[in-house]
Image 1 (cartoon, each protein chain N blue to C red):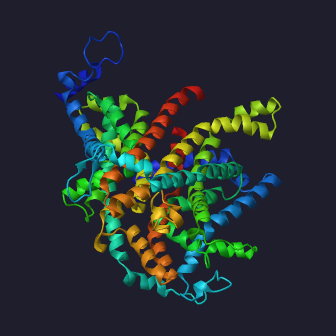
Image 2 (image 1 turned 45 degrees about the vertical axis):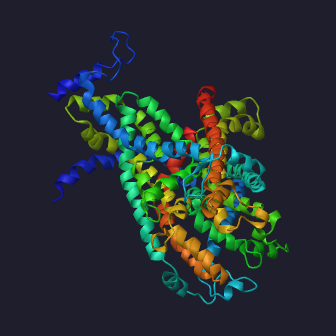
Image 3 (image 1 turned 135 degrees about the horizontal axis):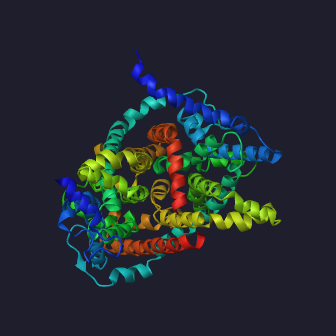
Length: 319
Length: 307
């Protein structure tokens, strides 16, 4: 019966033991049910990937080289879109804005590391602190953006009222070119530190005590122990957070669209995704928008691939 | 009489008493400070916590004010008078109710179906011998590296071709095929399960779907729970997808509804109404978070150890 069939399944594939004859794993008649079910099981994500990632990607490789307004079919235009892009001040401005807003990443990491170090001590209310600091992180971006737009209101917002209470007259944050980016960075740090803090905390707790004790025996003070034991041990997490921060930051959209619906004062807060969205869906320059999203996709792909590469190396260097 | 239940619990209880007696000082010691430095750190953390909560408190406070008291100087923290009516007004002021319904339809369908497909795939990728499996897995890995914004225009055109724009389908259907992050996470989790467990079931004559439901699914349930919660929060909070695909008000998800509230009523400076609506949109996710905070925080810690 099927029991005998399956028993041979276990021995059939050569799992590296040299005795097995040159039969490719999983090719035998006896493993057929496993192969068939296996294909059925993994089919949905593979099909989904083909339909909603591969097909759009291939199509955008074509559409990026066309003039296309979405109503008539795309007309091939060679490198036109990329030539437009290189001379498009708003494209470069939005790219610059996106990069500038990533200043929030190091700031957020420093703050969350400090918080994690503080929470790594034994004290009452640790769970409560974790929950409170992570609360903004789970909240909806839309609601948070709406809240901060109001909190950053020049005349009656929370931020300026607090500043006024210590005698500082705050700017009209979202309406002044100089202040719109710092305002968005503050909000991003506020929303993001909880997550990084949780990761740092987990990493801190997994540092073997023996390492710190050994350093202590060697006469290292608290600061040197932190610098030469803790920080290197946290490197993988830091790296992970920097990369995910860059990937997430490169895709920033909702905050901009809600808080500064026109791209901010003098286009000061428009991010690259916001600009792609505006060109594609508002101005119906679909070919041009596709070309820009291709550039964005390549940049994010490079960062992610770099992370995967370093990650696979890290496994060996850390262990 | 409760004879059947009394038998298994008796040995469990004695087992439970033992470790507690073995470490007597632990619970007490944790709630005390060990040095003055700890007290300072605690105070700083409290100040930080207040800063984190201040904007949310301000949101609640504003949502309970009258339109005039929003502009009171000095600002009121405790609204006077308390205007509960704002929470009654939001339901007429915009399609909040249908927004909640649409968001629930999208997130529930996607997560229920998508979790099953993802788990099946994770089982296939981790434990089954399928020719070409590793190459396919690498391809999917590549798929994770392409973010949605980079593909949003061709994807939009695909759905507009088949007439799905302005329906909830573009938000639902791709999710039904499973979530790649979830597949990876569950696969990772299953890798640590010994093969012999599944092989034993095969020898006993179980088919692979049976193995999945009877052995694999119960094994990965804790991992699934954490992933489901995170995925729910992601879908519920999604903004870019809905804003691209949905035009008509009756299909708007909750996030779009409150964004439109913001655009419409800010002109009339009706901030209490906007804040009340936004709070209503926040509540489901915050509730899920507070209920499952332990699992969520643990699963995040797991993410970190992988990275």
